[in-house]
Amino acid sequence: MVLKLYGSPISTCTKRVATILHEKQVPFQFVEIDFAKGEHKSPAFLEKQPFGQVPYIDDDGFILYESRAIARYIAANYPEKGAALLPTEKKANALFEQAASVELSNFDEFAHRAVGEMVFKPMFGGTSNKAVFDELIATLDKKLDAYNVILGKQKYLAGDEITLADLFHLPYGTMLPVAGSNILETKPNVARWWKDVSSRPSWQAVKDKVAGTA
Image (tube, rainbow, N blue to C red):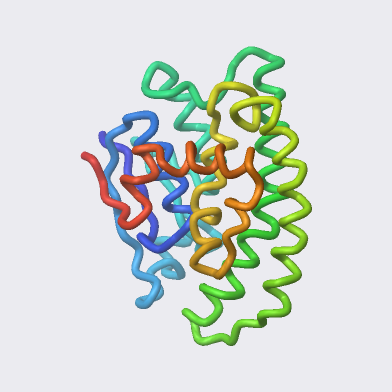
């Protein structure tokens, strides 16, 4: 049975999972959830994803939600395909988990709110607050100073091999310019890393449109 990815083509978290599926060369069927029709709040959907959010996967009856958990599952389940992405040696795995925690606490925390303020809020009928956006970007700028130090010593966030932690940045990092900030281009080591990560074929395949490969 081909793995099914349930999500929305405009969902950042859906794109995160689709990127990893492409990286690991795992065939999948994309099942689009229509937000406008409220499909993500239907009883059938909530039975699989009780929070009414996307994405979730159905891997031959195994249901899993939360994009980062799905990414770890895919990388662990298909270790022989594509880039490794999830180190298994204890110290390398610890460094990966450190980098993944950094992404969640020091990047996503601010980038997703900044993008939400300027892109998603008006998309759903709200009004953007530029002052809030500027404050979030100022905080993110300080966080990226630490990224610049880390990336001055190694190629990727967990070492010299790419991991899920790097790829986790892609959906919101790519939307920062749409929101009005080129912050990822302002620090040399960050800019070098970002150009590398964002140019990967896996992201190029999903950044504009999520489509299955089955």
